[in-house]
Length: 256
Image (cartoon, rainbow, N blue to C red; front, side, top):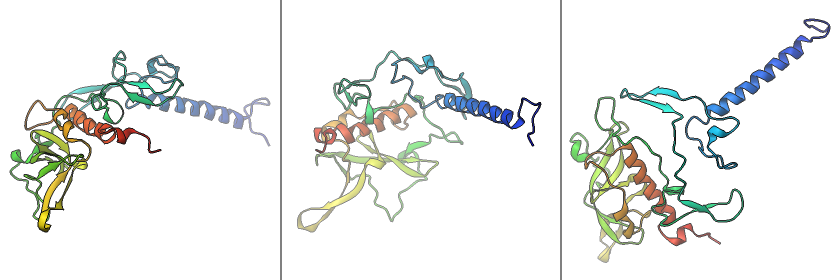
């Protein structure tokens, strides 16, 4: 028995066609929404902004932030500033290599996002990340070694300074940065340990392998000594990211 709207229209076939239309619309909608944020703004195939593609970008949507400010996504972007990199070969999809000083090219592992140049605040109105000198209620537990005052050893074995303070994430209650002569070093790229010196004496120290001694002077600075903005955080971590790959020629050269 065939159920249909008429002798020439099958109900099951109509439902199937409606499902196909719905599914196509869903895929189209999801692909447009996926380009709202965190998506390449320039098409690798055409070299043009994604707004000129067949799918295009969705209409800007307003998002209200916790501090009352508004942000929109997608945002109008300036496509006139090319990446500080060039193709290493003359074919499409070839790998890119930074131009000039790779530590300052802001490309690849050293790339950063243009985040808001403001301090991220907690729900109670305090800076989310602050040095311990501004947080008298925080202290290092006795079971852990306090890195303050320890020498900092760069990737080439040279002493570049000592840890002057610890920067804490108030909400997560974890160490985010170590302050070394006014510059911030991401805690995830620092190792608090030590080595055996003469006569078997244990000398505690902090090792930072991402940078060589000559690179520490180039760590991006901050506008305020006791705060760090979102943009400053991105630039600092990007600089150390560049160091993990470009600090020495051997790090970026092929293994074979």
